[in-house]
Length: 142
Image (cartoon, rainbow, N blue to C red):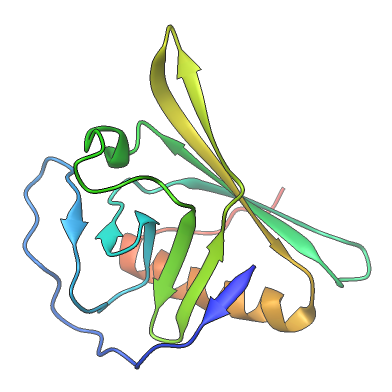
């Protein structure tokens, strides 16, 4: 996992979006967003699965995107270079990204973010709190 600092952003009004999902190129972040291509927000909300070691020393977040909008861009916005979690504090990223194909057509993307310390785990949880608030998500413990 890589953390990159950037200037703080202000949270507030979101750019206009139609009902149909589409890619949005953002100039400044005003919310917690996920991106496969830097600067292009992914509107598809993923299923997120968390695992953590018994000691709490490390953990993994698995993001599963069913039919993400990045597939519809067909390379015009750029190549998928990883999964970037962008918010007010900066960017978390992973390059552990795999696509699932059915009959030669892309159907899903699975990305894994490994956290190797309490600091990384806490930073991830702060991001997810913001992302959940922005997308109306909840937490379900298994």
